[in-house]
Image 1 (cartoon, one colour):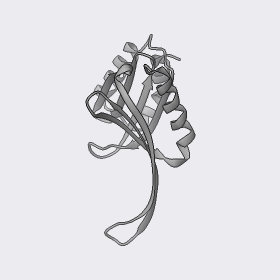
Image 2 (cartoon, one colour):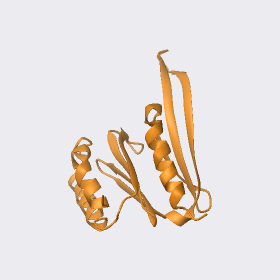
Image 3 (cartoon, one colour):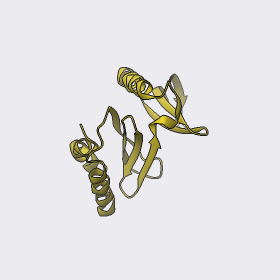
Length: 149
């Protein structure tokens, strides 16, 4: 699968975040730029927008040359490219606990964090539900298999 094909498949998901026209234009430009990018593996999810209100579509894809971390929100786009050979290590952490909000309501957190450390301590971090452990572990293994030994 190419990056273009992946982004075409994710277009209905992008629509769920209600992107503005500029976000859609950038989405299409990124899709076109990844038309020959052959993907080894990928991860995507809808998440709460960390830069403001609403939702964001988070996409990570990689091959032997690059890792792309792309976050589309309704009015912003973050687009990070990391050469795969710059990855130093990857790790998965799970956290389970209870939190109590200001109203005294208790909620359970059952999260998984996948971190890719590259270059001089820079990080790509993906947080998702623990039930996606097998998928994250598969991605981690595939990424480690392409790194220089």
